[in-house]
Image 1 (tube, rainbow, N blue to C red):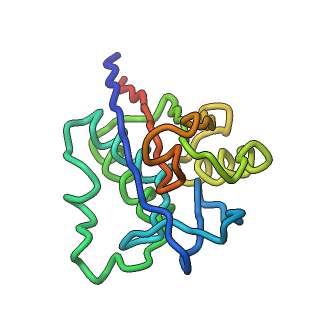
Image 2 (image 1 turned 90 degrees about the vertical axis):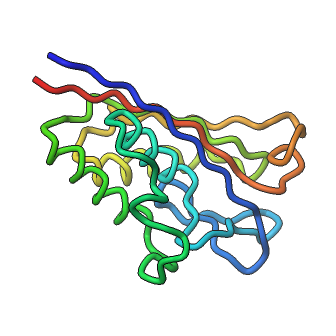
Length: 161
């Protein structure tokens, strides 16, 4: 059996007038803010996609979904995740598990984590117990601490029989 590990990272600016979507779940930010980006700007799903792609040395999400391509404007990141999962499967690999940490001062994510795990697991084709989603603050330090944006770190473990 072969194993591969990949990591991913993403950060998007918080702005007014945009929805806040994390892990495929629409949230309400207490300041009425959402994430700015070409697609739906779901940093959690973007970091997971980069982790999956990185495990197989396939580049990053910008290679497959360039921000200057109008096809991806407003795209649902969970749909993009399905395409990345297909790339993994085409190469004969399966997902063992994924894990992530969302860095945000607000909103509090704990009430929505199970819904995020379920949404991601469904698109990955794995049981929710193979999807880790954690949340932390940055203790008011740096851009996420000042609520200028939300970031996410992710890791993926793949296996090939």
